[in-house]
Length: 340
Image 1 (cartoon, helix red, strand yellow):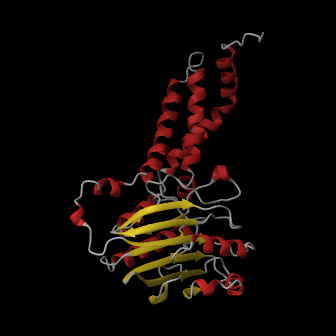
Image 2 (cartoon, rainbow, N blue to C red):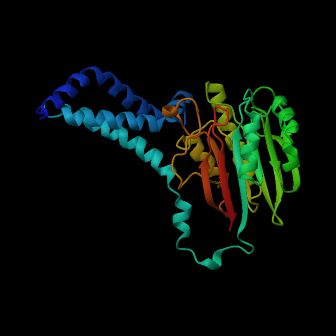
Image 3 (tube, rainbow, N blue to C red):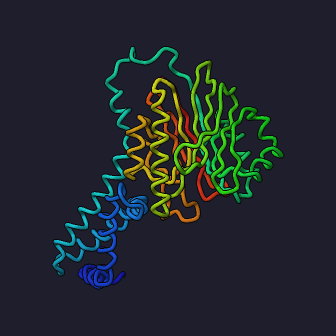
């Protein structure tokens, strides 16, 4: 017969652990409140990217405090911990809900535009310039058969490898800017490009590939871009300035259908990502599909969604998923859209 387990030992165990964990609790709370300043500080913005991880840590810490509460006076600390937890949960949860879909539920079918139902699929991928698993990537594209492929970190080795693998046979229409500094970009299409260009949007002068593609007889403009990561105050300002330039580009022709793809080096709950959506009028394809983290591949516990597919609001997102590891430090994102 099993020995009786003394439940009274559980709170005592957590009390002992709590003595060592207080510093971690204070640290997680402090990081949460600092992250609220992501709109004005690059260090706060870096912390803000990891709200999911902070929420998970604070949830565990709140659980420990609750168990130890009867024998330790932790009411004030518990309340602050729960407030910090809720700040993270609300910030992340808000970006996961598709408000545009909820708003459109009450709209009448007659509000749909003529010719609605045009389907287009896109694969977004930061390939990692030193990635050697290029044949596997080509196999992924041939399995998914997306209409458009948007790439970042596209360098000369990737260009040569794709040519050798006859990638251009499947995607004869393309626009690219090859660079060997991790900021090369490319757009590949099965369907004819009506126009294409390389734009330097923002003072950072990193390229953005732009292509207007004939989708079922109607134009759709695609952008592939890769802003600087906010590792320093200067790069933080340059990334945000590029976001503003992208928003201005989108708004310069509000009537067009547009899809913006890229490793934006920004999580959806950052103040500047929210500003990008607000200023451009684009919607996040991820909304309604969960968190869908994409980076870093080699550490799932720190993974956050940096790779994005944004679209004008005349598109409905039918499919949005993150694919498996194909040798990069980012995961590919596959999206199917229907133009209403």
